[in-house]
Image (tube, rainbow, N blue to C red; front, side, top):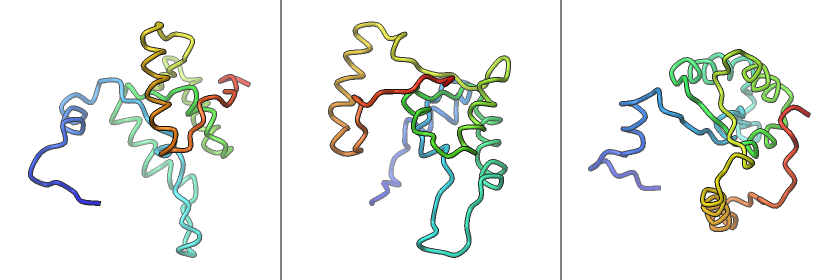
Length: 133
């Protein structure tokens, strides 16, 4: 991968200049990395929480995930952390739900998912379990 150092990344610049905006996270930012096939030294969840998750939730007060991302969190430790975060009042985590989309937003979401599916193997047609099941 080539990194262009001649210009600023406008999205990253926006996050730094306005950390209070809603920032939607993908599942890969919430799941501890597994490098077991490369090293004997693991990365346990308490360490990941301490050095990655907790600081992100402190630095960015308007984090969000889509309900499909919630369903991707299968590790009990991650699911428990996110559920505990959702149980805080007010919750520091926003859940984007398909049921709240306008018809135009739904059409845009569906068209983007259709284009990224071949690259990500994300199947939008899979049933999404409810958030509190």
